[in-house]
Length: 443
Image (spheres, rainbow, N blue to C red):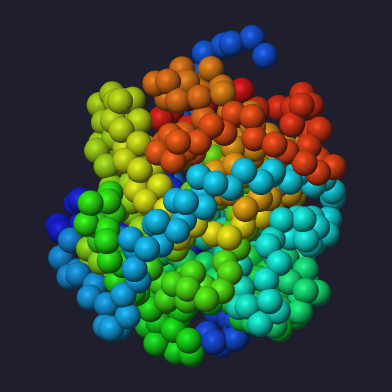
């Protein structure tokens, strides 16, 4: 795909969210009804590194419209999200919440989803609207008719989300929405929903599936969940141009939103669970459409990728990851979910996209504190307090997303309480496999 000259400054979205789809299969669904001893990390050979991170150097399908000359997104809604008030509220909650993280073992994704929901999700009046945000967009490619369709194993299992929906229905909730934000055109989002099994699942459960995108459909039709809203009080943050999709803002104001990520390693962010999954709700006013601006959260990654042609600059990689982490911490403080229910049926080691190493035991990890859930998930993946990881990431023993957000909030995640019948899995010996785009491997 050729780039316009003004697109030179684009970072590669694929580094954080996988390759763009290679095709756009048609779907009949209407838009509104997509109902041990310390060892150094293992170096990666040049050929292996290229294979492991090939899509990291591919231009995302969103890039031609996410360029500097596309013009800014100007929200056309008089409503402004009060960022200062949300930050004050969420920071206070995140500092005070010491509730345990639940770990539940089991083989059935649907049962795991229902069980972790019942164990963790706060009880609210039945009339409370609930938004469930899975990881639907962290895929590698969309390949129909291939034994590996490029989606399965990288995204949240639809049956896990079905279990959450059924748990909420059992509590009397009738206003349930499944929502995700991608950097995809509308037709490709529908194709993804179809290929992943989400379109069929929500149809059977009678709940809507919407994109938190200003894609010309979800921002103008129905409740306009993808409509970008301005956020005040962000001037001194790391994301002064942050916008929030109306669907998230509505549930922050008078509802409940549940993050339902896939537990997996990630070639850039190390782990991808709660805080990383929040990239799906990010919009930026720097360009348009706003939902295609997610790449700006890790824009400095381009500088690092340039160095790989002449000699890798690890300091540049870590710096880009630190900046991404600080921006995502700002998003967490503004829009923290009420609960994180993470699917590990199974959890995946590897790089998150092209190298997948299933963990041996299936489980769900959940809690009301996003960083605590991320900590326990990192521990299960073998990427908490890891000297091997520190050797590759200039001192970071876990994902900088978790470490920097916790430090900012003054949290000690080290001895967080864990309950549930799967808690013992954390002390069992298990394989560790992380493939970084830096490049190095932790085993």
